[in-house]
Image 1 (cartoon, rainbow, N blue to C red):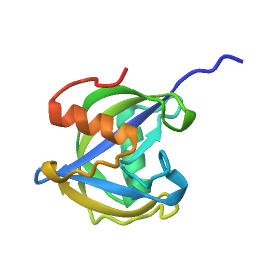
Image 2: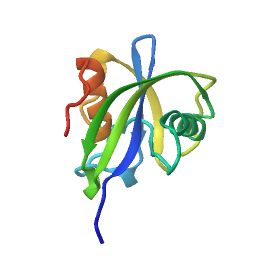
Image 3: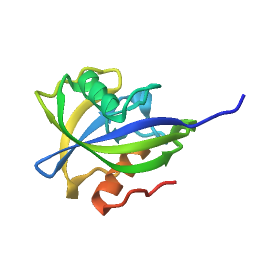
Image 4: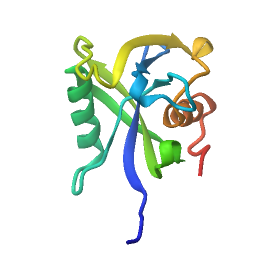
Length: 139
């Protein structure tokens, strides 16, 4: 059987120059530590990128998106996987709710200067691309 990489979206939610990050639960520890991440999901066969993002934001928070822009494409090999992550920046409308508590302990807004160091690799990739205005930092 030939293994192939999966394709997903890594979603960066930005509001008033702050980035929304979620503290992943213990089941998502990376290198033995609890880490911060961004929402993201696999793209389903036949699904448009925008549809994946809308579905993810609805499932994670019960919110809608008001703006979407593709900002990066990166490879991610965390936890023995191989993903091609399409980084998108979005603005959302509605009140944030934590709808998947088995994955996320909490959500917090961080200024660009206060982003935690303990980031899940796909989150680090998309944040680095956003802050450094680069399309790719991990191939």
